[in-house]
Image (cartoon, rainbow, N blue to C red; front, side, top):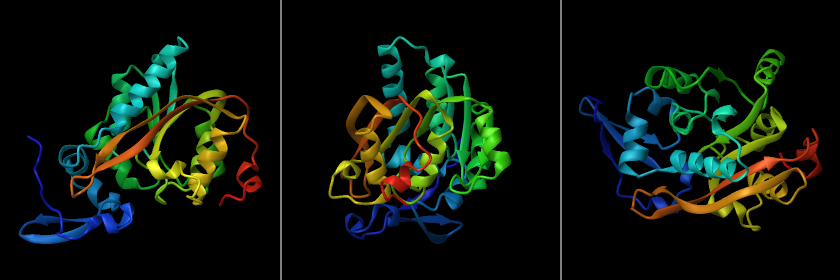
Length: 258
């Protein structure tokens, strides 16, 4: 039986905080510890805590929704899911990988920047990924770069990990460069990141890609990502696109994105 944790949401106005700064209290052995929602290292060390917090308590459904969008996009062009070679960026403990496996994807590699993520994936979902890299995509070693390229990926997925500093624009861009020219991208982003008033690097990267010649959008959908601590609905865009040309190495510099 999966362990149940005692989780307490503090009586504060979480909506006044940045989403990456929202905290909860975890009570263990009679002691309370405050953790941020983005303290993934501490969360992943505890089997089932991530699922209990985000999926059971806050009703997150992004992995299944984005996997479904990818499936529908491929079905439209009559291409099978089971032939994809997927790089799952920000793979965490394997929630997205599990959904992709359910959709029929046979070849998957996870990548995350913290070793606790890989440890959790291997502990909780040992049969999902063919390999799992703990790497900093903004500073890839030559060996890791060549190793990733050797997989010949034709799809990049990234769910619930973009736009909050967890995966900076350069990391996402580096991962995209590991996908073949006619490969697929499937990811989600917070609703506000497509607003022209948002001048953050990641927001600008996504907008530049959408309106560039390098990416065709096959599916764009606004949906409820999860609930906030107060029970408000948090909306994200799910996006599936297909690369059409090789993106120049200096794409970020061209658009002043750091």
